[in-house]
Image 1: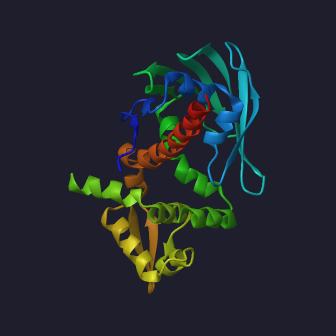
Image 2: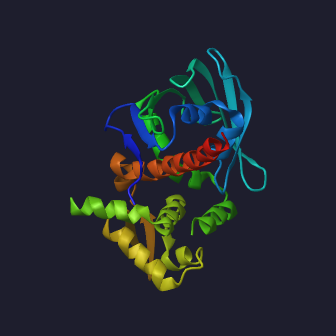
Length: 160
Length: 107
């Protein structure tokens, strides 16, 4: 089955564009990005639970997220600041993984209504350098490297 | 072009992604890789063969043992390593969509 999510990443550029069309009105697509309890639900996966520690959804507001494994151990934390928070239209925020060597990225989310019941998300992500972008894209593999061997095995078992 | 399509097929399979993850940390023999899975040994061998054929894995002979290692050069090609990243976002967005559909019904 073809993935509905498209990613445009040109060689040698420090940015990427993620686009996705949703079978949802734009108001609900925006809500999913603006309400902490909903964010926690869709950012979580079978081996990581996302938790919103702080969320001030407004211009100059800030946020902090945390991801924990099945044992409740913190896998990573991230944080950033909102530069724009326009209802049903646009969110501009910075994003930084704490204690990780990836720098700060700038993320521009544009919420676009297509019909009354469908919408599109355009995510433009700009990294500090080409090298950092490429490293972050490889993170699904890098995460494996950072895991203790027994934890890695647990992940592998759930992947099957 | 045919080769490229094979690479995408190779990493579309969760077991093969898991194998790549496993050997990313160190070169391993087929036996050591297979011991991490409940899957039958011939199935794991088949996965290793596919990953080797599309150059995602390389082999080194050490005495009588053959070690599999990740072919870093191949994995560095943006078009290839972007695929797991895209899959991660796609899973996330699928979840977002199904959660929000419930909110829609509640209204």
